[in-house]
Length: 504
Image (cartoon, rainbow, N blue to C red; front, side, top):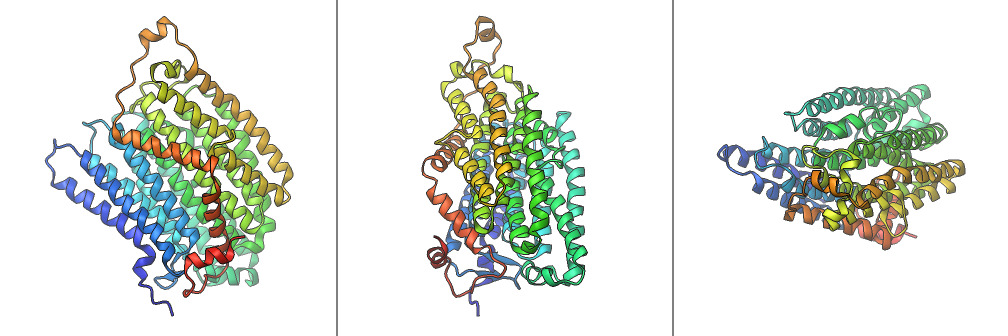
């Protein structure tokens, strides 16, 4: 019998919830004109404690809590650590990016932390109703954050579009949950995994899979469910986009892995070709559309769609190989994408005063450090060796080839070459020597504070580490992949022992 208190299974979520509540209470007690910057530091520290609690969960026996609704395993810990790391970096970025006179800063920090609660809960859930709750907590927070710059026209427009389309996608997911309950009589992921293959009404099971795929593919902005992405990325503040483009996607991909490899492995003959097509569409549409963009944030939005396609290519891999490749790519993409949006926040301005590629001309001469870092992260997004982006694509395409999807891997490589065109266009603009007229009209770069410096350092170190010494992250991804099985491991087996036993 499992003697571990259930609250240990959701300890990071508990810490994040307490942090968010305290931020709101302290914010309400401060005078209206008092600086809220300290609340950002408090939220960062609280998220850091949740990060440490996530790592500590590795010492717990693998198993479930709260009547089998949440799970602790190396798979869940990997995504908890990743999500908490993303939120820490975006909070640090926001500390210096938000103007001192911006409205409702306390709510801004609280919403970021509450969003992390939903993301972590989504990755740990083994009950579909808890999945829905986690997804809604995460989504509602990002809906509000997307419209944070309400004094601009694009901010509210981004929030409304994201909310309306996101609500439809959530409805598809919920309808899929209802259908699978009708077919199996349960909403427990492990019970569904045992009963779905022998359910009398297989058409209902297949319909449930289709509905849930629509809901999740929207969240990861995969084509053809990507139409919200460019407008929302352009209208939301850049620090919010740094979070939105990585954290919720990581959580959604974690659930997608559980949905396909754990709940419906017997339907692989159906979902594998569907994801093959979605991956090709995402890569191709994303890259072709990005080639036409002059706005940096819209270009990166279409780039995000293409990267969703690269990641989905890993789902062509069999078993733990595909899971580990997709998991590793999620971490690599998060590191480099948070980094590039941190730099866009600085170079483009909080209110997007310099939104176009032409506005970045000669940036490396005005700020050698910022210009060099932008080129570095663009190189990683291309997939050049010694960066996290290279190994992310390498493992993803290798998994696809191992699963027999050689054509998919070739299409992915061709799309990577196509993507280099627009990434290098921005890199050349950054490195181009400005003429006298350019020097006169370009606005000087604002001073960089401690928060942004720390955020950039963390993102850069992570991207370099995943490109030079990826063994640790890959080992963690493989361990999590081996523990993502149709039934939970015995509660008496510690997680670190499982690592030794299951990792090749």
